[in-house]
Image (cartoon, rainbow, N blue to C red; front, side):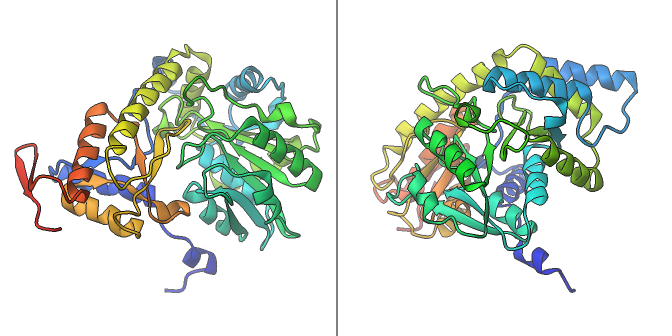
Length: 405
């Protein structure tokens, strides 16, 4: 079979593959614990459910405008004004099939072949392949000091004549690092000075801990006209626990939104009206579910970090937000892929190899599940890795015996 060069360069999403593997193992009755997941286990807001039910009961579920229904665009406008202090017009907004599609059509609208997109490392697994799908060149930018917190100098060293855009995801998936206000101010100013697109992937911006407040990128932008190259991506998946609803959005200059709308119109048309109505319900409804989720995640984070610190060989960095921690397990195994497979095979705990995020030796662990999964999952991992562990471990009624050193 003859495939395109682009198709041959793209691999399957490792996080989606893990979700599928977890589902298969559970169907078989295996007591798998999924610590690699990227979706909160809480229920979506009741306002979202009721809005969808009311629309479904009406029977009026038709095609949507390619850029989203007016009610959702108005809700996004209100959201942008509330959390960013920025009043935008409907022509500055596009609603898409998830924040991932909003980001994808933005890249398709701005990239020419061989142009470069920079993003901090570690990075979300999809950034490199999304850039490749646009025939662009992904350029990961590790922090020179080895931390999860890049400096402007790290980007300045890699920006060249082919650089077209920078993506900033803060707080970051997979590390949970929330970049400083100084860094956000610097990167906004730098992109304006260099005439680069700056894509702010703010999908986790309200899921932050320890009294932190969301950072508003518009606060540092000098150019707020229709020539601005600042793009803000967000959605309902994470903060409202609405991952399966697949509704996200982008806010940008009108010309770019028009181009993105044209692309999306030919790709998928507008997102489902039913799901857009649910998103309107979430955005306009009672917001307590977001804070409840945030508090739950902060508590879960504390539990996971305390358990991981009991490992002699694990280096762990408490995340500032999201629902992930990115822990260094290289003491036990340099290959994160081998280590992840080992943990699945020996104790049926699913983790995501750090190499998928651009850093070898690490594992991404999610704490968006229940406390029981976190504590038992980490206990199983320690039993599998710590040579001083007891010889036996019970998983439910099943007894495991260590047959390895």
